[in-house]
Length: 326
Image (cartoon, rainbow, N blue to C red; front, top):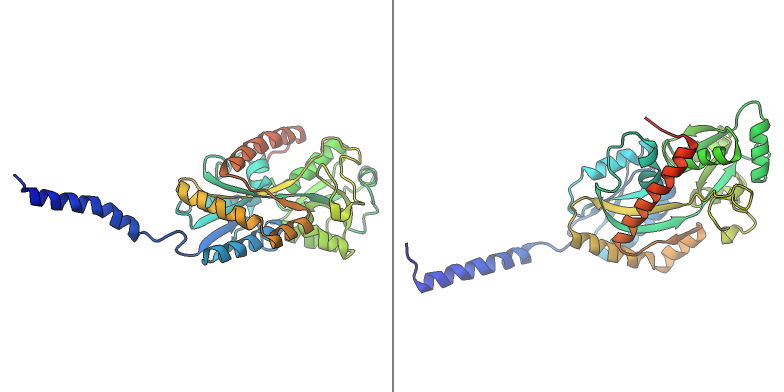
């Protein structure tokens, strides 16, 4: 079959214009609300930062960023949901040291691969933790706590936000270095753990500054030490655990945002650029400073490298503490 030059020109015109027309027909991102899965309960450490940043992103995009709390199994339930979500940029997930550093080392089976199942978006928050006790525990220092833990006939108990979380591993790491045998009591998030700690149902907790600080200032808990390498400026009288004699005890928390694997690179890069902007806003910086944290930021590659380093770091701690979870 032969075609006239006119028909060929017409066919070529249609072929060239179809992709352009289709491209212009695609709505710009984001064209609808974005869900951010938080794999921990409301009002916990992650929520302290996730909700204000989500509000800031709502302002930037003119589309709602909706927090969807899905707690349980040390964050695994929410992570599993994120992995199974469409990679279209409309489902993101907040993860942490627990989900992407500790968890992969303590759980024999996880429903997700912390490296290969996600597209790293941004390392968002670097935060201090704190060792706190119920006022009924007569310890005012790390050495007091160690002495009491070793002397008591009934073991002291330490609460955590769940098996395989950073607060769990902090307690086990403390036991290893201090030679104590405090009993681990896991909860489904830091909020319910905090409730029982304040009521005296458990004795000790390694928690984020963000959630413990109000209780310390209200006199409901006693601060013993911070868990990072340096003191928290707003509580400079509280020493680090390293200063108190447990060399090598550096247990800090970080929070980050991922998208499901195969989310388009242009969407990931757009999110990264805009969240970087949100992290520099005065109200976000003030919030972090008040809670012993600082913004992370940087490109997605920074988060990717950070996760791989953290998995290696916590692997050594888990091996030394002999912690495994079925």
